[in-house]
Length: 349
Image 1 (cartoon, rainbow, N blue to C red):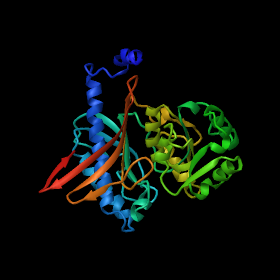
Image 2: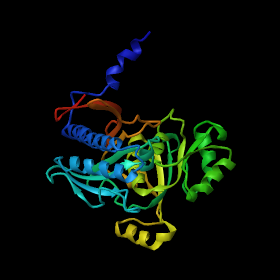
Image 3: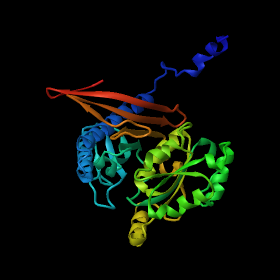
Image 4: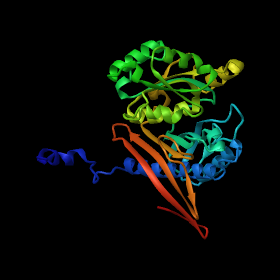
């Protein structure tokens, strides 16, 4: 009874004997950049829970910078969070790596959700996206209005449509009633009108205190219980989200949102870096590269990733690694790893 399934199975399996130099390169780079977020996560977790978010951010940034500078790459940080509040950060425009190796663009947040790290709350991560030079959008650390949906709703919702219209479309394409929809929105005063409009239409709102990056990715994964991300959050995280959304086949629409108190300054900086405040950007604009790598490692426990667990001379960690080449297969893995530190030697298993 299983013969028909077994007969065509070889066609569905990866052709392991057909490795190309490009596939070997992306595999090697994926593992290296996952190691970067692993180190960032462990550094942040080591000082988590002491109420000092700046210290955790500083340690994650320091360790990640040291590791990136050891890699045989010619990397450029194209966007990173920290400019707005003068927090520790890998600076936009900073060169990383030895200068020998592939030319790469890197969008990074060494510690996403610093508040959760300081208080040992949920969903803190260390995260980055990587592409070939010119493959990720270069943008300042400002705000961005975002709408993220999964594959079935891609191209059918519109960031300029009303909340009611978008919820109606979502319900139709997902074959659900409106009251079954769960929309994630960052809990901020600037998003109150969005939260209220969703509730008025009868949909459910999951308000998150910090960190809208992983919820955006979860919206692209069936069975996550999240059907869309809406609202204004940080732009660097928007670029990183777009990289994962593109790999997963989801849809993202975004528009830069200058803070009212810094409007002229932020618009000027955005234009200087090649952006425009009135344009709508999609996952294909924000992550245009032919090769995309996304890596996130949990710092504290969350819905998608477990946080760092220290024991004796080691630590257990969990990462989400996504990569894709144009026309190539999607690679998506949850990676559990154990680091052992003894007598000055590090062992990863």
